[in-house]
Length: 214
Length: 247
Ligand SMILES: Nc1ncnc2c1ncn2[C@@H]1O[C@H](COP(=O)(O)OP(=O)(O)O)[C@@H](O)[C@H]1O
Ligand SMILES: [Mg+2]
Image 1 (cartoon, rainbow over the protein chains, first blue to last red):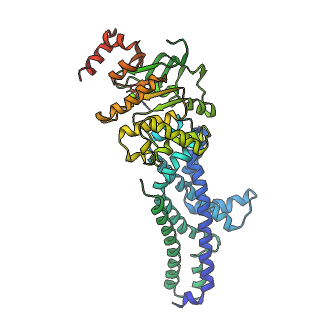
Image 2 (image 1 turned 120 degrees about the vertical axis):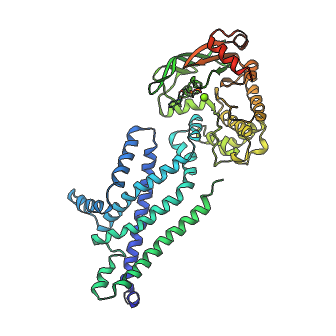
Image 3 (image 1 turned 90 degrees about the vertical axis):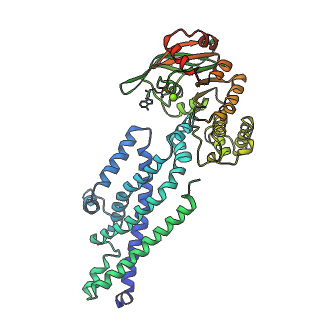
């Protein structure tokens, strides 16, 4: 029980590390996922190919392998960045593939006739996507995007294995200090719960506000 | 009548995989002309309509609007589509926007009109199709006939040179068909160039300059309504007419 109060700053650092990873990687994943989803429905064949390959590669690569590839691979090509940035890159890119697919399935819920109507009025692909398709797709993608970001928060634990400061990694130090492993993990779990419940709550609010079909 | 051709199709061929849906189509629609396209289901009427504003691409042939060949892609194509309105069987109103916003959207985005200017034009058009009082409702709150009239107003908002109608009344309950046909009759009287795929023979007789009969991807007959309905030449047209005129 004392493990939390006696190691407040260690837990705090780990917790903040996980929050940072989650927030930055989420932003990256949402932006990239949005771009890739636009590519996948674009009228230009080469863009569709890029989107499809992006999703196929990232969604089917184990995240740990991706971490190895980014953290060990990129420095080989002369790209040396702090480990935390590498971790955000790996997590963000990986998750963007799932965001992309969630967005794309949302786009597919919008009847194609509405897109055709917009195009037949002379609206460009971008205008059609931005004014007709995405505003309607947005409503149905709120829940799956929420789940994807919760998964991201939990996946961030892998970064600990690559010496990035984050919540799960605190157990090593605490274990060496001789604290009960059970209580150490209980408090770590509570930390993750706080983060995932916060994401959940945020997406519940978004869904209440925009998710209801008229 | 076709002295001043607005829509021209020459030797147009279109395939869906191995299915040859449009076979050597030649069709000219003069300015101010109303052409009704009829024919059995699957004969390629919708596809024909959709190739005219390039919602479907063609494999060979030539299509021109007002003397200009259809652009392949991009800005030129978008500009051309703004000139040719389309009304669909399933209305295709933007479900997340009000009736007024449906009519205004493309005016803002494509014609770059100011918001109040666009909204004023939209209200005029809604008035014209008898829906001024429904401006602030959402499409789902309207009947099918009302939705289709909004769709017509939306197409008119671009000040198109021609309008394409793909079975505009086929999805409607019988009591709503007339309110839509009346709007179309009015447009025809005002001189709008129209290509109308429909099985409404009353409309064809009273509003059309020509009837084009299609079967298996070909134009079989292209004549005045009186001629076509009283003396169909081909067996396929006779057969088709005997089936639809029974009920
Ligand atoms: N997108 C498509 N892909 C494949 N076949 C299609 C497609 N659209 C229409 N067809 C086929 O092309 C033929 C003509 O269709 P259509 O133009 O819709 O006929 P109509 O409007 O006269 O009923 C039909 O056999 C139909 O099944
Ligand atoms: Mg059809």
